[in-house]
Image (tube, rainbow, N blue to C red):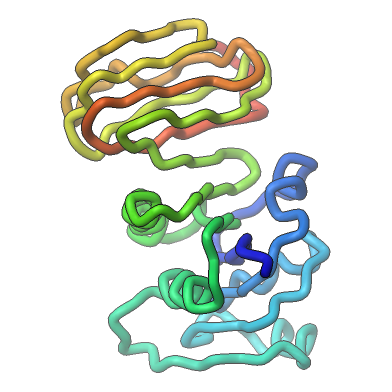
Length: 216
């Protein structure tokens, strides 16, 4: 059974080879207006969920054969969270959240990041992408992210980080303590290939700009 799912969300999405590689071979679920990304990605979602307040008649007309699950606007979950729940019910163990980072709603983008950290804690492999940026949860243990040479990345703690190590980067760290809210983890640069992160305690988020080689 295919356990990799892509969730189409309503934020901005620049489709390039890196995004297509993330999505390749996955099952797909659309969340409300995120359906607009299906054409650019060349995918056909197996279900379309949400309250559909961000979906106009033209978008519905483009995808008349997709099964829809409708929810009332007054609900306890965002459309993206509903799509995640649907994916988990269908056996997801790896999730790509496409269109998850950039959009009109800062609260939704931040919620997607925090949700990803929680899901990673539950054992779900997860990555968020807008094409211009990627986000990877950082938990205790080792995390490896493939990065182009010179690409900018940052480590942001959602708690105090203890024993943070970063290898194969212009500014490596070893057994470093990063207090919550400290800026020390912002604007590092990859040397190219796998960048290895180690963490003894805490949780955070790695933000990668795979096409940004502007310097630090």
